[in-house]
Length: 288
Ligand SMILES: Cc1nn(C)cc1-c1nc2c(-c3cnn(Cc4ccccc4)c3)c(Cl)cnc2[nH]1
Image (cartoon, rainbow, N blue to C red; front, top):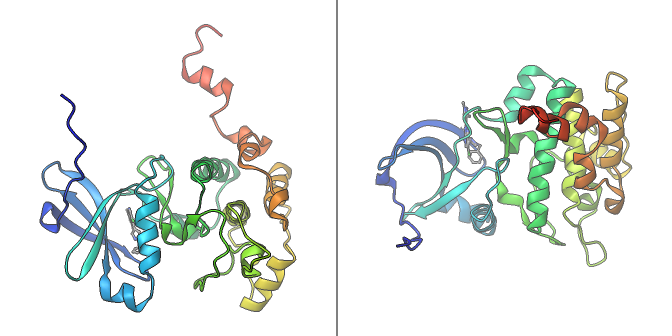
């Protein structure tokens, strides 16, 4: 007898609420345990009046709609949501090692082997999203969490949309990660596609290896430098890593290296165990 998949009706009394984990522009996140199963999760509590004042209802709806249909080891799960008179609560996967940007600030920058594994995981996550025609559009360390095994998890889908898209967004926060085609502002002539995430992956890779973003400057200068792809890569960065950054930070979205080629790039293959050889090793390669 196959249990019909009932959409469980969640409510706050079903959870023991633990310590606050963090807060964003809208709402706070708490550690929580679902009482009947002991399942540990993170509850993101959004206040309805703050959301309507911030005119972000559409983003919250999109975050729920998009993230609840995603299931990938490098994408933070959204298990469900519910609301009461004043709040909307998202039931999210708990990432036990917290926010990636805190690790990056503490370590200043990552060694190449760690950066390569992180970029490989982000490429896998983006490949999964793009296959579903979802573009994240806000890939940056602040939106990446770290799981119990040190694996990265993209979170905060508030800015994600279905590709292609030409909506103009009033974004706040850092411009550092914005691709040139989103800076130009969208009109009928220039749609942007999921390739915006490839540019941001290049900015992320640069920041992992150099400890600062490639176009970090005053607001005006940053915009100018992004529009010209005006950045320098320090000589401390290996030739292979430099090559991959240069293939991602390309002004023309169509000329950016595709995710399939990121995964097989020499710099990634060199440091990531996911290759055939490593697979054989993992399976005890008795017969090889
Ligand atoms: C912090 C922290 N330290 N440790 C050891 C684990 C964590 C942890 N944090 C999370 C978090 C988490 C917390 N804050 N934020 C940022 C935020 C908050 C509110 C709105 C938008 C964005 C995410 C999540 Cl969702 C999911 N899992 C998390 N795990």
